[in-house]
Image 1 (cartoon, rainbow, N blue to C red):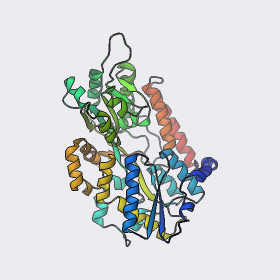
Image 2: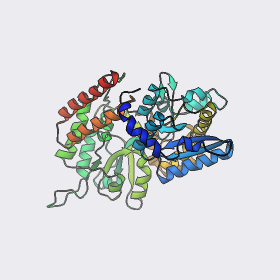
Image 3: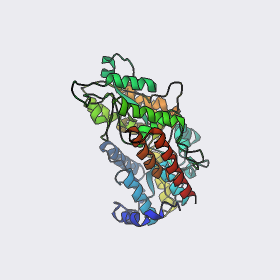
Image 4: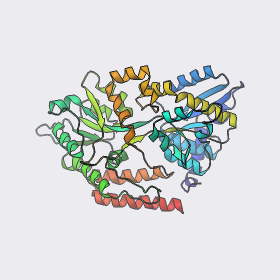
Length: 435
């Protein structure tokens, strides 16, 4: 058991009592169908509508199975409820999960790897497996076994108000960090006598990704490959933090705010921001009829191109307390919702990246991409995909990195000091977990 789990057990155990649609309740179905309960955090109207539609469509084709999608709140709430449920042995048979969660569950032998089903009666051919983009397959693989299956994937991109760019004399978004700083200055609109710009050239949120996306783009890493050593304090991370600090504290061209960035972007308050490609539909709605926007790869340091951060959850199948026939039914539903047609539909309806190469070639997706060329950008960036570290204590690390990086961006600490403290805190977490 990870050392971080016992301290949470008392609090989290109580959460299972309020986790709606528990497995025990689902087991009370009066018909003879196999009950597959799927816990998720997809609360958006497009997301939940599609998940519920998939459940109905799957049941129509598989009358022996009853699928129960259960929304469990945001990702933090889902994580807490999953931990509570596994402690109480009342966990669902399948759920969304980040890679760090997967590592945690694997330490307790709680998961039934999806690879166990590839050669079974409802299996996948080699061609079907390799149709899933290779970086996604690799990031769902532990010790040579594919444990979970990729689901809602997105990457970080640069969003820009194309009308503002052209008005300032630019025909394309910035590609390098130097260009990002230059264009941010050029697009910032100041009014005489006012200290606050009317329009900011750039926006960033007080989140770890404001720093980590650029650090990864500079080919920095926060942990050693074996996750045993902190290494965030390096020249590439330092370069990223200094850039962000300069844009906020020196140039005063970057708006540092916690609001969802598509809102100030859509209102014309900011000209550019970096965020998940899952924001595409929100940009479409907020900018419609006002201006043309464009998506582009995250800018990189001059002469160096690291990876593009991809995030999003995967779907895992829990081994216990579920009998084999329930786990197999869960796999059948997982396979259904991630097949070529449904992966394409998910991408079109939600803005997430289609996890299958073949999904981009369906007639519906081709027509959609023709009408919405911005959605091609994340697909083109898949070969450059990089991911957050996967240790089970990554969530603890995220908070430490976020805290000190934000202080450096705001000028409350120097970037050098912030990185030194980040490494100290990360190593403390590693040393504690490895005892």
